[in-house]
Length: 339
Length: 177
Image (tube, rainbow over all chains, first blue to last red; front, side, top):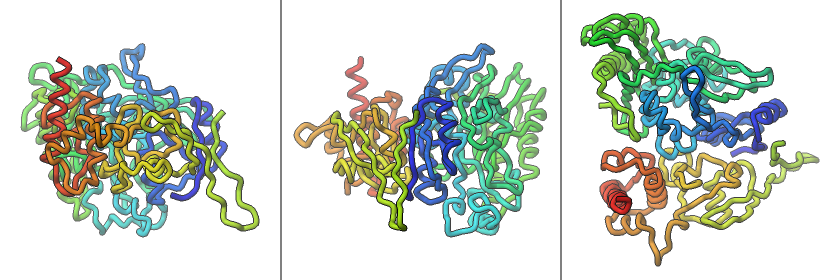
């Protein structure tokens, strides 16, 4: 690796101050993505501020009935938290579907939101990539784009956000609390990640120096009718080609409220609120699910090697909705495919 | 105040000296202070500075699990973390689990079940399996397979690895009853 300096922050204010005092610096939590990117020379921060040991690792009840997930709580501790398992099982399953036990033990909740795309060209500094080097071009368009996005892409970038956890979060709609040089603010999860447009170098809407301090989940957790379905090239320890998070509220066979988000298909966790509206008030039937799934992928664009994702997404949505309606999936200590 | 590890900038156009600082690590119960640069991974610190070469460098990118060690009893990939991030942590490597004369239950089970061929992934497999035991979340074969999926074996000794881990999971389960 190339040279950089390092410091360990003692509290949030210290971290924010330290980062502001060092040009080209970065926060590091678990480091499971950032350190890899530094080894590949994709990221070259001049200074690292270690925030992993800040006192932000608690998972605690909120007065409004929600649950606060501390930014430095590990993915493992979050997935296996008894409150998360009981009240937000879709999050439990999504986290356990991602990465490996070793990575989940190191990776933090804040870091999960901040991880960068696994597009091959973003990682390969010998090739043009607008996300890595704005204006250089997109090698994935017209290149090997099997893992790339089909929804909300632009002519500048077709990269996907790689997280599983964030797909469940998109369905649960928490707020992201951040602290920065200009104070604290909350960002709706929906507004945290962004589409590439003509600025694919920006993954999210954080401003310079802002640090995630917690994810605040609302009370509603869709604990009875949920699904996290992840489809990938091997049975475990691989990024999603397509994943689907579903949360439903049911009155008999009628869907009274729905949440639907996709992973592996877009620059951000892809929540489709128009599809959620289409599900509302409808019977939980194959006909309903098929109609909604067709609606979600109606504007999908394939780029050659990833054309298959459109049909894969359509079918995955149908299957996940069916699983959720039937209450097939349960929270647990392991993700076994959601079958 | 932050602890700052840095060095004075080079003068006169000479290459900057490698800026190292003392880093206190507790490895297999012994605390030692190593002189490390901030960018030294925990894996390189263990192998090249603490001279504990049981931990293996496979992919060096968190994809194979050969570098798995236990930090405060939890398994992580030592290649994707910096040594300086682990002052005050308790690090256990394969050398800390057992000795040739006194193998840990997992080490003995790997021998008994022929759970390796070339052996390169084995320290990571065993440290990972020890982490799995510490977690106590895997009971069935399907659960063990899923929770061992972060460790690859290019020789394909998975059948033996699964048998070995299952035997120790079962025997620990019996002891708890």
